[in-house]
Image (cartoon, rainbow, N blue to C red; front, side, top):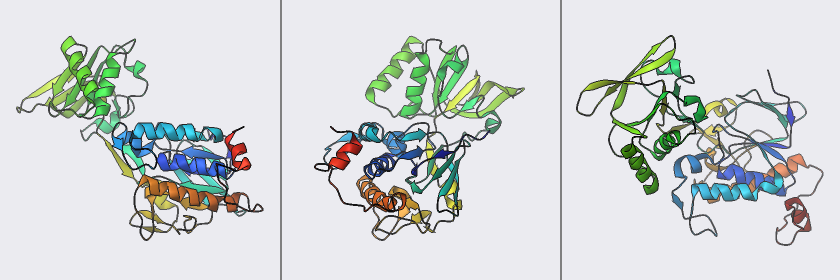
Length: 346
């Protein structure tokens, strides 16, 4: 069943730092928006790849982590209350005769808007899949790429695959559930894990106490009966093979960006990036803008602070479309009573 159509001024594709700041800049132009992202949370690449790593080149902030930057941006946009639609992709964009845009997502959400801003970074992040025979048929039921609701694993044997922080954190979370799995195993091809020291220590403590089992090796096969996973075949570093009872396998194998449906929207592109002008960062299609790593122009630099600049000018371009009868003035948040009104400042 198709969801009810949402009418809004703007839709932003991408909830990374640039997409979040785009919502803020649109808000300063009195433009309300909805934000769509393929990930199940906001933050984009910043949270997926740099959540706890330091960033040093954000103006006025000597150092912050990716997670901290995203939290600050979320606080900044609160006055404008954008609505987020996560875990879905924009699949279809159509220009209508009246100049508006019809935007549809993979979750059957439908928007009618005046402008679309693509802030999709290098594309929609998708989980790298487990390259083991039988895995595709079990995806979503017994093979997973995100932890999701951990209560569904209660009383069952769960194996978490991966050597990065997401795998370590996921395995530890399962051991702490009120109704935990029957067993939790963390498996990696070697006994070397990449995570914050406090997480690594917690992992070693859990292994020592027996709450978490450690398996060094790689998956070679899945055994299922009537669509239900029951056994994992494993190859160990010494060349031996073993079987382990498993009802659910959660693979944290990293993420890979894919341009996805954007390539089918008929926009001018160069090397899988959207061509824009540098006055408003508009694409070659009226009402569609592109900011951040997804766009290209002479002198383009893929930096967050450059994306912030692009989002600012795109908001001015969007204002000319959303409010065609208004004169778009340059105002300062320090002194403008109108911006203070929009920001909810007394």
